[in-house]
Length: 302
Image 1 (tube, rainbow, N blue to C red):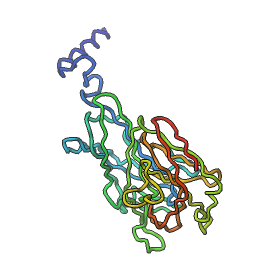
Image 2 (cartoon, rainbow, N blue to C red; image 1 turned 180 degrees about the horizontal axis):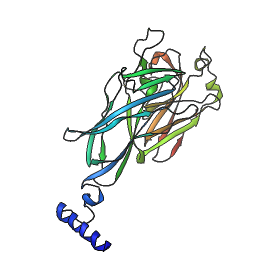
Image 3 (cartoon, helix red, strand yellow; image 1 turned 45 degrees about the vertical axis):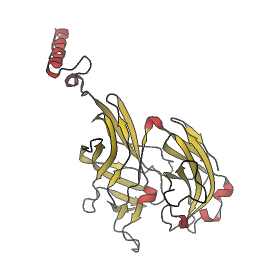
Image 4 (spheres, rainbow, N blue to C red; image 1 turned 135 degrees about the vertical axis):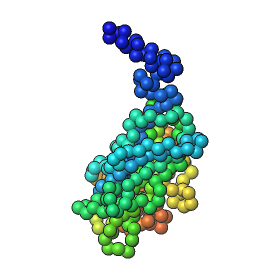
């Protein structure tokens, strides 16, 4: 009887939907021409904050016909982006998991974030103090990707907290709230790798890397392509696609979720009050180059 009931249910499903065998979304849950999207967020460690939580209320995706496909999250999902103290990064916090999405090409992704001081749903922690977080601009990324018409796609969006976090009033001794300018980067997990290496003690001991506070400010800047050098780095559009801290004890570093391609890396020492990626606030001490291949770790030592 159970086999007969199942056969009848399948027959009814095929009749109602006109699907071919294996495509009946009423029975199996997947509509024709839809894939499943998993989207995670990640951020590299920064001395500017210990905790940064974004409360994401929705994700909108712009398709080829210039129509926004919106996925609402009710209630808004609070995501703690920064790695735990002492962790190098490389973790991603899932925002969407196996979400159904029409197949085709998409041109942009927007995060709709609850970042209002009144709600304090998004916030930053520095030491024992907590500050409301506001967005200084719309969190939208113009980046194309192809959603399969069946199967799955895994994406990760890197939020450059080190570059984007700032006080709303730089002259105030203590901020009432902080602002994040959303500098975003998208990568497909399947097509991404990482770069890892060490910085020699001679470079780590450079005077410009050791601040008067005793803090170590060494960081590795990752630039796209091989044509970056001291003459053009941090000038015009030649800004890093990512930056990661260097561990002061052993000099190790690792940059994650980099699309397979060629990169130039620079070991940088940042001044205490520098503007992010400004040429007058950073000393670039050495350049190396690396090629990232999907699923692999490319070595690059300074």
